[in-house]
Image (tube, rainbow, N blue to C red; front, side):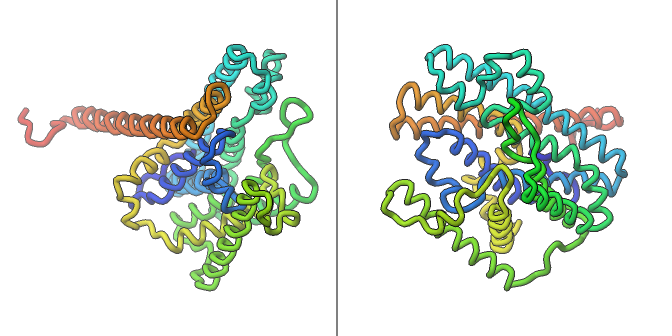
Length: 392
């Protein structure tokens, strides 16, 4: 959900592809009755799409605003960052209003109070005058509306992170690691509304992954190296990823067929998501290392026509994310109130994917046309003809 990398050098389509893929996984995983849940990342690993989003958001933010910092200074970079924070905040409030309207209408229409607790909108329906204030303060977070507040908080602290990265990579990483460790030991958290709740994504823990992403992104534009080239490190990461697949797959099969042994379930479960358990961090970083090693940025795979829709969604991530949240809730209502059969599930997924891809394509087309118009206007103002070959 960070700004897309711009300027110097060819665009790294890996970022757009994996961010787009994460959007589809989020849509699938947010529909509880969806059979495709068995084929997303939690079925084969300890981390999931949330880690992809936060890491890539930090990476791309560092590339965009880090370049601004180096070229135009910290003051202008900070102004640009907080302009983006404001855009994210407006998007979150807009999403909150539509989400609560969608859920409230469904509760009344089908007289199903289950959604009140399941989607955590009960307090809004009971005391809307208080809940709306808490929502504006990012403290009231209904189900599925917790990633944007996390990213808003993380990006708000980004100017300080940038300054530390400019000094040295460790100057940013060590404080982030210290805060993460203190959160695991002492249980630091941000309180949410109602008062007995905490943020589902604890910023004091998730900031570590964000800072690691920013360090990697800033290193790319500053010509630094985060890790030395090492085949041994790659082999260790690959072995860890392979073991994770075996363990998590055994948990997934155990959930379907109870007699199948779930490896290390008692020792490792649950893998805490709220405070970003260390196992999740290590797993994601291992996967990222393997992917970077095996999939170069110029891989022809990213030029395939079949892959292009996923890349488009990754390039328009904020709008597609918001749409995906609303569509997943709508899909949940359809499967619960009308039919939960496999055919209906497949139809819900196909329609959701199509709408997300269509929206991304429309936004891409509009922005291309808008840029073309802006260039034509600039050309006319400069006293030149906008199209080659046209005589005055």
